[in-house]
Image (cartoon, rainbow, N blue to C red; front, side, top):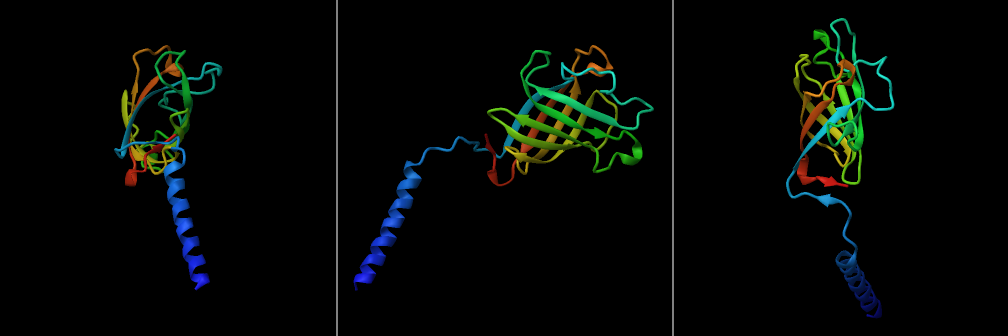
Length: 180
């Protein structure tokens, strides 16, 4: 009988400890949004400390690939806060337009968002406005999918210093929008 009392007391104390820890523990620093989607507006620019002589921001007619090494900023100005990087490449040839290799990686490193997004170029049409598909993410953007709309800003200095405005419309499965 004593062993049953000890067992019952141990189970009861363990249950009470779990409940107290759940109620008293500090709130997580993660922001949890009640909606399963997120809209972001960013700018992709040429880094200020890199020369533009060997990279092309716009694919030329004779170009084999569009190589992308840029920074993500909060605004279109050169002095805007850098919030991440944009890297990848696109093959602007008709045979490769449906290729899985036409992917841009947007990497974020801010107090609000930490992680990356994979953006796939479905059709590359050399237009001022391109709509790409968000096919996944990591960190704050785990399992994200949605749309990324790229538009050129009016403030062009040269072909190599074009700034792109990116509007991201992201959806998260199962309301898992935990953002740092």
